[in-house]
Length: 611
Image (tube, rainbow, N blue to C red; front, side):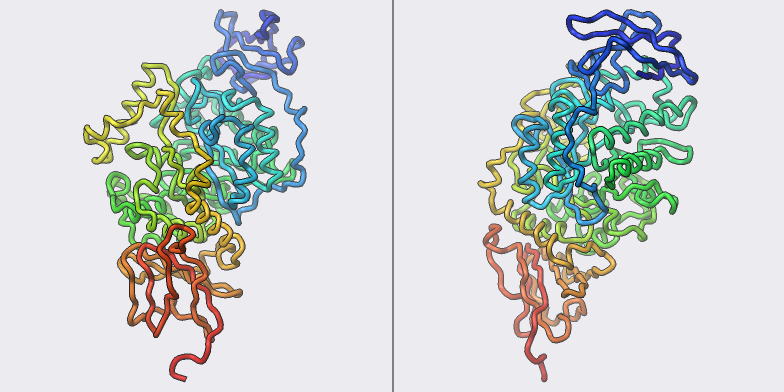
């Protein structure tokens, strides 16, 4: 056992196992503030805590593998070697060919457990999911929460099951050919149950600020042990739980002025751990200011992540779907050109002035490939950043949403769905956190201030509708109802068919933005042409009224020689609740139905017109 406590002169391990508690063992001091030793009376299943300098207080292990009584209780010894892994044939994740599914364990099923979630993996695979992204699972205070207030970075929360239940979930996912990546929070720690400062104040930095709490000390005095702590944390999740990568939360608040950057160190260590078990990893980062270097290889001056969340695509798509561009949507118009550019080039802002923040936004990123971006119409943050946690199908028309869903699921970047999106879940996704009353009041007030940037939410009648985050009913309302896969069958079929088309059609499966060219056909209509040796594909998304092109002086509309366009797929098929469709090209005129996406392929034709 080893712990870093540089301010202490004596560190003891105290046995806290029910019926066997009280026995203590002093650890030996090491250089650089560490204490270590073999504790003779502890074995798997025993509980323990640390005593510092003989004081009465007992603290859980900062690197605890499990907190059976929550973050304020003792730690439990876990033996990771006893789990019978069966995933030796699963080789991990490459960079291409993926569809991500963001999942919150506590609300994904009624039971809210790893075991219950594992029962849904076969259906996720049938849907076309290749990666499950778990929202944070590290131990946090209370009986429910999003997980971003975790306080024990090495301990999966007791709320969803025991450590082996999590291992079983990952093992089962691998059996179905699904990778699992973990959302990790390396930018701050939660306010309730955080005992790191008892071991050392140097865990945290006073040189930087975040919106959620003190950031970690990755570049100040005594930062080396802090860096080691989190580098080993990444290695631990890959080695002991067989995770296939990470989603790095809010990397703009992982502050480090030294080199190599801590993000680069974390990704390197994680990939080494993956190679040790014969698996490649997929690592994606969230970065609000859009620093493209995070997704570049280390040898090109980057941090070594595989991809970045692309909020720009989300924001312009939301404006196109809802017609509203207030607050942080104010710099977007939802135009066809914005949609084309976001899907072909990634970030829309790559250094231009961003008036909402009064400064430049983004770094140059034209060199990044389409697979360097993850796109989405919904995620946990963006759903909750609305008046009532409303999902996008509540904010727009069914036809518009079908059209946009097709565009985003067939485009080159890696798409991500949020749990329940595939069947238009009726449950909202609200912000919930089981904090004590005073902390809950502060959190709710802070959330109201954040949402006040939206004038429509700031109005008193609207703001009074905001749900209390600490109310258990707020949490319960967010649980999915899988019966809606049947009752909302049209939406479910839409997603499953689109993902099958993305997976099996060579033009869509290759994710080559350099072989995709776009054009604006009308004020609300765009075209993407996918060049492919197996046959070009034409994707036309018309978010406005019926569009008739007469004439049609656009070369991307021209079919390959000796062919003519026919409909391969349409969002207006009655199977999805659409109104039906006809062939788009007749008598030299192109006609595209309003609020639709049409996919065309080329078939052999007779003699060209005029011959």
